[in-house]
Image (tube, rainbow, N blue to C red):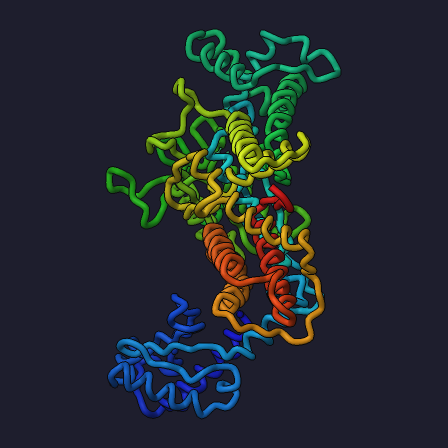
Length: 603
Ligand code: ARG
């Protein structure tokens, strides 16, 4: 109801202005505009919108809140246009004003929704004609080469993909960047180990399979810790790699390729699309970071290391915290790479992305890292005016015991095992249900439904939590047909598809929309909230808000479906109800698509 909200906003503001003209109150700030605080109603009992400002306005207007509310209402009901769309406003409690839209206003809005394939969600427009659409960069997933992609990366992948989808749907150009950890001193030991155990890999043209890279990493690490010679070779190897030694580079590429293939298998299963641009990409730009920091006077040499001291962020010792940007031995680190990345991403020349907004999706443990990096970028003037950089942190994935997620034998859970188990359990549930219902389905159907439901459950369980908090991973909960789960939402869609199979024409043309039941109006109101949810998501970056909305919508739909006859109703009600069903299906499908979750016709 964004359009209504906007026009109502203007009306309410004007009414407030008429009730309290500028010369009737004094405000320290000249040009101060009174804020009526018009918001969507927090509960259905409050109607569609609320004006909450009266309480705060008492301070400026020096009148009791109820008097202020009364004065606003008096002016509002003098406004004919207002009364065309709204019922008489009601004052509640100490001075809240509740606004309820008239049925014909809701119907008009509904009519527009039915004919709009964007379901009311506005597409962003660039104010200036011919102005290019600057990309929004979402940096997500970003696992480390030769290491396991763990549940933290899974969270980043799922949340980042959802945000990317929302920005894309809004009409932004989105750059989905996979900032993989493909550079660093660990490659010294990996390459040294590779040269020892599989020298043939470096002499043949075809890449050879190194087997389990994670095991390979562990072996290399052990040698590094125990063997002085190996350690020396590894250090030399790092220098060789940095100097572009062809053989070292070949080994490095081999390791990266192998990891990349493993990661891609997970992305394919999750239907995630990403552009890899790893840390190594920024190597040519690292020196410039140091130079630029030096020029702007931010660089300090501390104990031989080049660093920047942060303002307002103190270390444990109470002293300003430094961010090291070049180590004593001349090496660069994670922070340097991120600084180079910010410069590159905002850079407007062909040597950059010219982005307007950078979003980093990582675990909350990296909050300090990003706070430091962003502050340095800010102070070095690398962030263009009006551009934004944001860290989108998320909490830990925990087992049902509240501890770090582990396998029964205490090892870290492999992502592919996690996905497999969700799918297997979804399959077992489905087979049980089929046999209970005496239904017979093909194996193909069973495989398709189990895969879709299993993956959907994992994604939805993650997205539906407020990302900032830790979340407890529970197969039983996420696969349940009850509660705020993917299967529950998918099932609402299956019900609607079922109506169509039973002869309901979801696309019937309706001359006049007629509704008489409370459940119908509830559903209409819920449907009309979709646009606001999506637009807010772009600001708040909280996918759980969309999940909650879709859950509300499914519940409201199910009440309507259970309590109001649809196929058995007489015309014109039958078709009008089918229209509501279709719009519910479209809204649920679009919402799920934005979450990155495919839907089903039957399950
Ligand atoms: N590779 C890092 C990790 O596994 C995440 C990188 C996030 N992106 C960034 N630009 N720092 O923790």
